[in-house]
Length: 445
Image 1 (cartoon, rainbow, N blue to C red):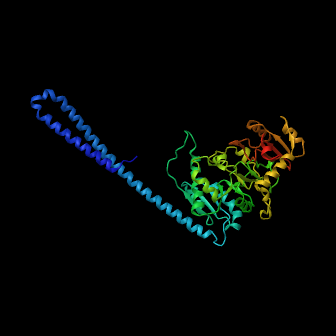
Image 2: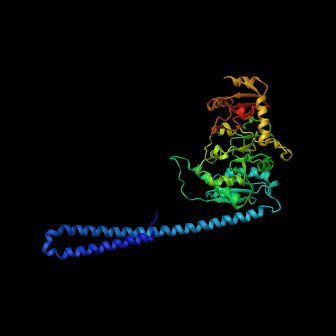
Image 3: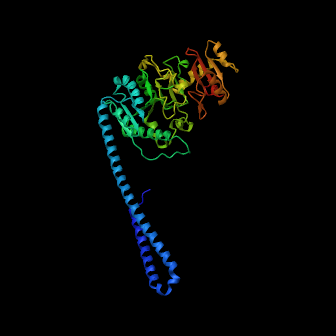
C-alpha cells in the first residue's frame, strides 16, 4: 500500500535529526581522541558504521518516495480514466435507450443478456433473440450487460444498434469466503446485482427478463412472458416466471401448453418484478445467487411458474460451471417449436388455490405403484402412475432409474411442487408422479 507523502517527510526529518545527533557525538568523540584514543576507537568505528547505515537508509527512503509519487500519479490518471469511461457508458446507454423505447408503448419487460468473455456465444444468443424480438421490440427493449473489459465482447455488443449496451467494470480484487473457491461465482453475483439495480432503479422498468449469453429462445418466448406478466402482477404467491424446466429433456415432455407451479427456482431465462427485486437487492449474496434464491427463507413459500416444454435452450458447454451435467441434462433439452397463441390461453388455472386443487386431483387419480421394480411396473401400465419416495436418498434412487435430475436444494427436489416431481414417460401423454411422504397431505388429498 502506498504511503502518504507526509509520512515520508516525517521519516526524512527523523533521519536528519538522527544524523545530526550522530555527527555531534562523532565530533565529541574525535575531540577527546587525543587523550583517550585507545579507549574510544571501538566507539568511533561503531559511529562510522551507524553513519553509513543512516546514509543508506536516507537514500532508500528517498528512492521509495519517488516510486510512491509515481504510483500516486498513475492512480490519479486511472481514476480520471475510470470516471470518463463511466460517463461515456452512461451517455451511450442514455442515447441508445432514448432511440429504442417508444414513448407511446409501456414495455412489458426489459430483456437483459448477461455477458462476460464469450463473443461467439453472445452472437449466437443475440441472433436467436432478434429473430423474434424485432416484431415486439417496443414491448421488450433489449440490453446487453457486460461484466469486465473484454474487447471482443464489447465490440460485438456495440455492433447491434437495436440493443442498449451496459458495462460493469469492477477492478477490486475478489475476496472469497472459503479457500479455493471459484471467484467467477462471486463476479457473477456482483454483476447480476449491478445490472438489475440499473434496470429496476435507474431505468425504472416494472419487470425484467434475465437471459445469459449461452441461450437460444423459442418462437413463442415473448408471447409466453407477456401472458405470464399479468399472472405475475396479480398473484403475489408467485415470485418469478421461468422459461426453463430442469426435466425438460425430449423424453420427459409432451404438451407445449402445459405450465406448472414449482417450489424450486429454475432460473435460465426468468422474469421478476421491481417490487420483488427491491426486496432481494439489499440482501443479495456475494456468490451462488441462484442457490440463494432457492432457500426457503428467501422465497418464503412463494412459487415459480415453469413450462413443461422449455422456451430457452442452454448451449453453454463451456463456462464458469465447466459444462457440468451438460451432456446428460442440458444437451437433450427440447426447445419448443410449436406455435402457441398465449394471448388466447386462460392461465387462471395457475392461481394458487386452483392449481393446488387441480394438481392434487391429478396426483390422486394416478395409479399407485410400489416396490423396487416400480420402473418396470410403470412401463407395463398405460396410465398415469405415482410412485412414493420416503426420503432424499430414496428419491435419488428412483430418479436415477428414470434418468431425471436427482439434485435437491434446501430440501426441495428440482422442479418439485409440494414434494411432487412430474414428468412424461418416454415422450408420451402418460405422467409419472414421484410423490414425497408428506405430499398428499400438502395437496389436500
